[in-house]
Image (cartoon, rainbow, N blue to C red; front, side, top):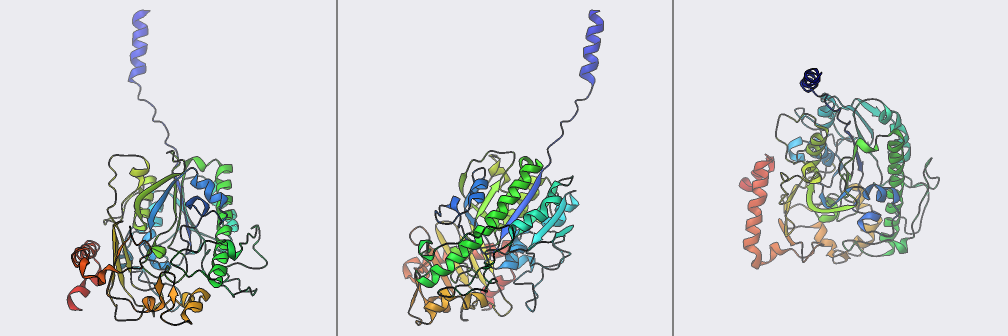
Length: 468
């Protein structure tokens, strides 16, 4: 009997262990349109974002998250490729007469995810070309101004079998739309309509209560516009709430990474289309379903070039055949010793609209920030919606010496070749040290860093150092 017992044990030990089934790894990437770090969890106690606050309560929240360019199409090409836009070829807007298009050779996030067995879908704003390069298997219908409708229209895709990647892009809080009602000071409506949107509670704000960032002029006109901007964000928040509800009801909240970002900062002069902090610094929430991050604020640099590498890393999907400019932040979230913290973030802007040629390159290491205005001889070209913005026009009409926040109107219209800022002492970039002889050594040091960045990322505008 004893010998038979030992034989039985040996047989059991010789049977290969059944591999434990790994949980599915789904990904939802939420991209809003022109939003700065304006939400309750970022410390704004006026704006109502309860659903974003709920998501943030169980996520890592990056306080130093940066777009590379404050322009829609160009930034979205970076988000979905892991490359700076001077490498994607998406130098500016893709729609209508602007007609910028990315290079055909790109191996983008949706294509790589699909090739790795993922179901892929996009809903809302797309704004990229050519479609084949950024191809999703499904293009779901839904008004990009109604994030609740977008969430409802994503429900069937989320609940289907198989791992999925959902690219969820609102048009809020972009300027424009909803101008059916005239308000005091005639602010842009930021998509808000008097009749509201189906399934969305209309949440309004009093201009007297909003928080005016120091880079903007604090007056009745600006406050009226910010109130509209807040209302548009509250509409996004409700869509996020509905999306979270669908994930919970489907049982997929525990195996779905959720990343919430904006393509870049808010649509106000001094932010959008610039390389200044308000244009590039944007929200970034990362909910990792397999790691606990209970409202964990992280000060490490994150660049939008890091998004594609991070999602491919989490999804265990195949990488492109070329080296991406970004790096995965998944080792940071998973508390791995292999994570190497970024020393700096970089910016690359060339166009917004087709008539807006104004290339800029930027480096920010948290101490100093340099901006190289490559075509500095030209007046700074305003985006059409920013030029007509009541916030800008109200001050512009007062003349070039009028103060627009921390700077004069003329400082926005005519810029020097180089701008150098001490971000610790001057977070609103109002004192250009590049004009101070005492900072020549530091300026030269940072010029070399910009050149090195351009070399490493194969920037065609590197040639400008030599022949201009």
